[in-house]
Amino acid sequence: MSRHDNKHQQAPCHWRPCVQSTIPVTANEVIPLRRPLDTNAVLIMTVLCAVWGFQQVAIKAIAADVAPVMQIAVRSGIAAILVLAADRLFGSARWLRGAGVAGLVTGVLFAAEFLFVAEGLTRTTAAHMAVFLYTAPLFAALGLHAFAPGERLSPLQWGGVVIAFAGITATFLLHGGTSDSHHTDNSLLGDLMGICGGAAWGFTTVVVRTSALSQAPAAQTLFYQLAAAFIVLLVVALASGQTSLTWTTPVWMSLGFQAIIVSFASYLTWFVLLRRYLAARLGVLSFLTPLFGVAFGHVLLNEPVDVSFAAGAILVLGGAFIVNGESLLQSLFRKVEGA
Image 1 (cartoon, rainbow, N blue to C red):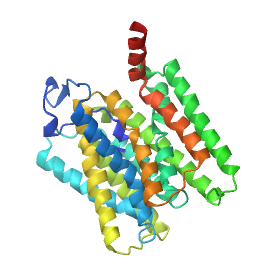
Image 2: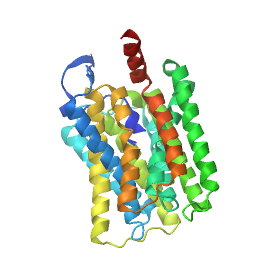
Image 3: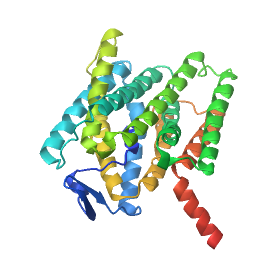
Image 4: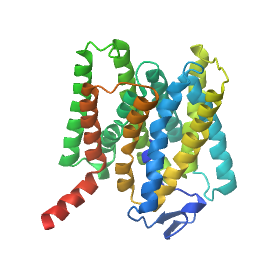
């Protein structure tokens, strides 16, 4: 999945493929003329969402051979090296000075997000994690409402927040009231960790948007996050005795996918898209991710999708969609009124 908070960062992407249709701002930065989504953008976003939706399944599938917290530490370390190498070879922008404190905070939040994901996946399903992690836009919107005067929530967005949190409440209440063996107190704790991961991701977005990192190259912010996740999660793995690795073919394949495809290639592709296309439209499409996550978990891991979870998930994702896609919805309303 930052990114992963960083996934919602609208800071400039300074990768060479982005250099087109731009106007100069400073000697070190350009702002593109973003355009509506075309077929290529939709196809690329669909692939990215499938990748992000599959990552929880990839983690859970090899959890018996490598603890999730160790998996994410390893993948983050590999991806951090790849990001740094790619930036040195292909990056054109200098890294911003004076962003160390903000970088540390975003790094810790990113590490916290994936610590919650790792520990949560040992208790709940990949499908539940995929949905509850996508409460991130709600926490980002609330944080930006409080700390960024230009990003106040509209009445429509407040409605989305209420709907989403009603979905979370309903899911937990109905979850606890069933006799299904899958619905245990332990899995409820895993679901709660998914929400905490979403909160950490959302607050990462707030820090990036309201700090010096909003002007930093994407590679710099992503490196801070990946490096911090590697250090923090490796320490956690060592302290909790979760460092055992059994090197099987599935383990190699899963860690390779997580490090190279998810943490490196997909996040940088996301930044490229943010520089070329309207961010609000991309954000709306990103809600395909939890749908892919639920589908992959059900098909590949035989995870159950019960009625109570489905009903709550619809409210959660629907509310988050309203918050994240408010500008698109307003545009559609105006078209309907003008018809």
